[in-house]
Structure formats: C-alpha cells, structure tokens
Length: 215
Image (cartoon, rainbow, N blue to C red; front, top):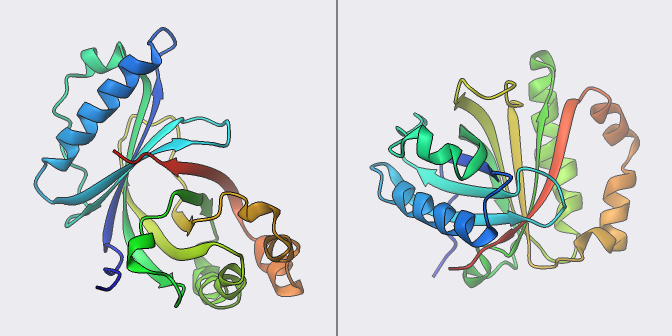
C-alpha cells in the first residue's frame, strides 16, 4: 500500500454559519452539502474540516476533482441563506507536492491541516517556487509531525465573493497538533537571510489551522 499522488485539481469550499442558526443544524446542513458534493460527477473524494484557530470561515471542505471547473450549485440559494452567512468556492490546479519519506499511508489524511493563501509578484513566481519547493520545504520536513505538502494555484472562483482570492494555496499536513511550539518550527519561522528576502515580496498572506472531521 502506498500514498496516492496529490490530486491535480482541488475544490475548496468555505462556509460561515448564519448568526441565528444552531450549531447542530448547521452541522447537519454542512454534512448534507458535503454528501451532495461527493455525489457530483468529477469529484473523486472529499474531506470536512473545522477551524481550530478562532478565525472565520469556521468550516472548510476539500474535494479532489477531475476538472478545474466549479460544479453547479444544486441547493437553492434562498435555502442556504437561512443556514450560512457566507459560502465561497474556489478551484485550484496542482503546482507540486511532497511527502515525508517516513509517512505511512495510513497517516494520510492527517488530523491537522496548516494552510495559507498568498499572492506573489508574477515576474518572480519561478524564483518563489524554486525557493519554496527547496529550502522552505526542507525546513518543514524537520518539524516533528510534518507529513505532507501540497501547493496549488487558483484557477477559478465564484464571482459573488467579496474579494478576489489569493493566487497560491498551500497545505501542510501534521499529525502533531503542537507543531508550532517545537524548536524546529521556530527555526523555520525565524528563517534564513534568503527567507527574509523572499517573504518581503509576498503580497498579502492568510494563515489558517483546521482539524479534520472524521465521519
């Protein structure tokens, strides 16, 4: 048994509960929408996550797909307004992936998902990719509990979103919920001179931490 390769296409769905909806009602809706997505043509697998960083959106679902086109929304928007205050759907194409050589197939998917969205000047994209896939990923591999990296580029998104999503979407999987407290992670955060030079060019970054909701 081996770890399957990262999906070439990924659908991200973010949702925030409506102010007056009970947690159990929202969770029931989220589970039903998740099931509806899994039944759509082109979606091969999907996972649900809940934020553990105290930020919004609270809920996230990730779907591996065979197409970068956004699937149609089958649930009437009027019904969704009673349950969710915001719903965002973005599709992405794979840039690269890397797995720790000691990662067991049964460890994927991991419980902790550390992710971030960022923009980077297009004229320096090759430089950024070379740095991240090399030096930066090698530092992540030293952090206790790090299992896998996947990096994606934005392909399409729902037009009604309040702002254009950032172009790059990076996912790190950990089996250690305390990874951010380790000396190895602190070394990564402090970075090298090259890290500081590269990160100066980052245009907007959003960092999130989610926990897998095992059904």
